[in-house]
Amino acid sequence: MKKMLLFVFVLAVLMGCSHQENETRVQQSEPYKFGAVLPLTGSNAFYGEFAKDGLGLAIEDINSAGGVNGKQVEMIYEDFGSDKTRVAPATQKLIDVDGVDALFTVTVMPTGIMAPLAEVAKVPFIYVNVVNTFAENKSFVFKDQLDGFEACKKLMRIAMEKHEKIALFGTNAEFTLLCRKGAQEIGPLAAFETYDQGSTDFRTQFTKIKESASTAVFLTVYAADCSNAFKQMRELGVKAQVLTPFQSFGCGSQENSKEFPDVLEGAIGADVAVDEQSTDALFVSFKNKLEERNPASFLRGSAVMYDDVVTMAKAYEGCMDTSCVADNLRHLSMHGVSGNVGYNGDQIIDREIMVTRFDGKNWVRT
Image: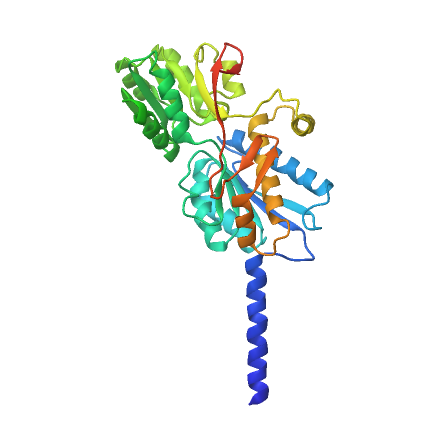
C-alpha cells in the first residue's frame, strides 16, 4: 500500500512538472519557436509579404547576435490565404503541435480569431492593425499600429477646414466602424457606405457618395481593393479629396500611388511615423538588409514587423514563463527601426501618428 501511494505521489509530481513545462513553453535544449499566421497568398498577400520580410530579417539579426538566453530563434509561417476558416486550425497547429513561444499576425480578420486562442494558451501574441479591442482586458495579446480612432479624428479635423460634406467608404470591418466613430467625434458624415471583402463592384456605394455632394471621402479599404475603388471613382466622376487614415498600408500604398496619381491628387493620409530617410545607423542597416532581401518590400510595414519580433525577443530575456514575458512586454521601451517602441504598462502600443499629403508623386509629411 505504501509503495502504491508513493507511486501515485511520484506520478502526480511528474505530471505537475510536465504541465508546468508545457505552460512555461521553455525547452532548454531546443530553440525558441515563434509562429506567424499570415495572408501569404490571395487578395491580401501584400500584407503577408511585407510582414514575412520584416519577421524573417529580425530572426536573422537576433540569431546572428547570439539569440535569446543563449538559444537560437526560429520562425514558423502558416498561410491562410484569404480564407478565414484556415486561421484557427493554423493557429492551433502552431500552439499544440509546434509549441510556439510567441505568435504574430497582420490585418484585422486573423487577429479576431487568433487573440482568444493565444490568450487561453498563454502565448504572447503581437498583432499589427489599428483595432485596439482585441488587446483590451487581455494579458497575452498586444496591439501594434497607430490608433485608428485618433487617426480619423485628426483627418476629419483637417478636412472640415475646407469641406462641408465628407463621406466614408470602407470594408465592412471593425476598423471602418472605428474610423467612422473617430470622424463623427469631430463632425457629421454626409454618407457612410461599406462593402464586404471579396466584392469588386462599388458603383452603387460611390453613386450614393456622389449624390451626397461630398467633396472629401475617407477610404478605409484594403490595399488590393483600392484599384477597383479608384477606377470606379473615375468612371462615375466622383471628384473628392481622398482621406486615407492608414495611408501606406491602404489606398496610399506605393503601388496605388503610382497607378492613380490623378485620383489621389491632394490626398491626405495618416500613418505610422517612420522616417524612411533617417540616417540613424540602426535604421540604415535595416533598410540596406531589407533591400538586399527584397527590393520591392514595403519598408514601413516591414520595419513595424521587425520591431515586433525584436521586442518579443527582448521580453524573453531572463524569463522562464510566458507571464514574465507578457509583463516584460508591457513595460519594455526601446528605440527600434520604426521609431520608439513601448506599451506604457498596458497591451496597446503608443505610436506617433503623422499626417501626410500626396504631392503628385510622393507622400510627404506635413
